[in-house]
Image 1 (cartoon, rainbow, N blue to C red):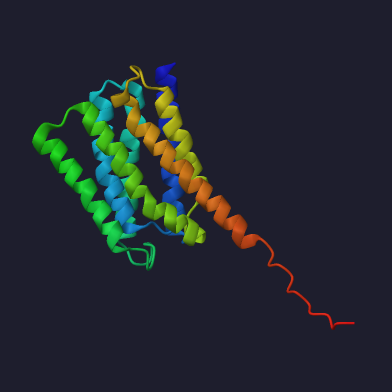
Image 2: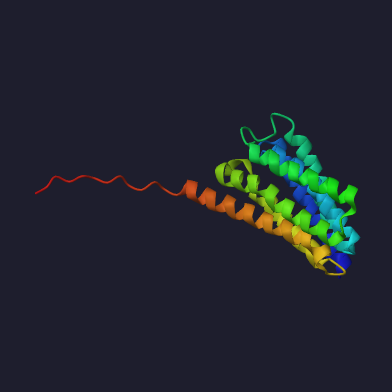
Length: 206
């Protein structure tokens, strides 16, 4: 069962990656550069922590996420594909936090559980700029790609062979971020599609 769920997670994740990359290449989605740079770093930390904690087949989802994030980050560096006018100073700070967490994990030798907690915290912080941009510029995000990513992450959680905080934390946190982005996209798009209220008409007093 774990093997089947792990393979299913990998297949859905691959579809998510192909769809996301196609959406970027065709101009229907534009990735936030700093978010995807930091996500690549955190995904490496999260997948390593997940694997070290004995997630087994469940670690495939985390590893796939790291590879996909690296490819999307590479595309975001191309001016025609990256999201315009999206970066803020706070985004740079969040990216530096993710980098510092990764360096600390590799150099200081943080325990696996602590590394998993750092990965989750950094993933949530890094997701904030993309959640903001999903709300501000929903036309530059692909809701279907995020839904596929959510399904892949949840299948990865179900595929974990030895469920512990360390093995499940990153994928659960990743799922939560995807849910927030999906909600922001749908609510923002529905808000933008809502008809404007009819202007009030002043009637002359009798």
